[in-house]
Structure formats: structure tokens, C-alpha cells
Length: 77
Picture 1 (spheres, rainbow, N blue to C red):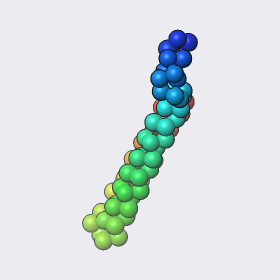
Picture 2 (cartoon, rainbow, N blue to C red):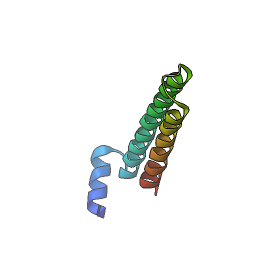
Picture 3 (cartoon, rainbow, N blue to C red):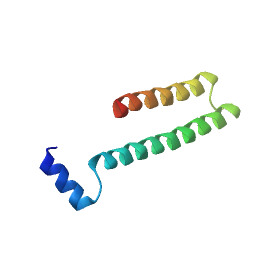
Picture 4 (cartoon, rainbow, N blue to C red):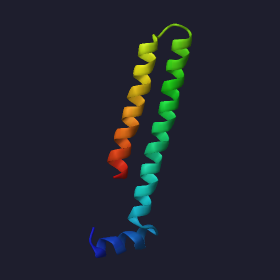
């Protein structure tokens, strides 16, 4: 954004675009962590009741960790 666009955004919105960016990234990570906690808990319950193998449980955990790392790299770099 150029200087005119930044000043217009701040004048109309009352806050800077960087603030909006930080809020959106925070919301994305909050939703990701809530989803991860739900997925890991659900997988753990399935594993403890012998509905999932240990390998399937670890696959869920690795997928969540990989998704978290990729989003961290993409959104925070």
C-alpha cells in the first residue's frame, strides 16, 4: 500500500493495517490450536479404546505438528 492508501485506511478504520494483520494471524493460530487439541483428544480416546492403532494416533499427531509448522512458516515469516 502506498502512503495515501495507508492514511485513508487508518483514517476510516481508526487502526493500522498491521494491527488487522496481527489479529487475523492470531485468530488463525487460535483456531488451529483448538482444532489440534480436539483432533489429538479424539485420536487419544480412539487409541485408548483400541479403535485406533498407535501408528494411526501418531499419524494424527504428526499431521497436526506438520500443519502447525507450515502455517507458522508461511504466516510469521
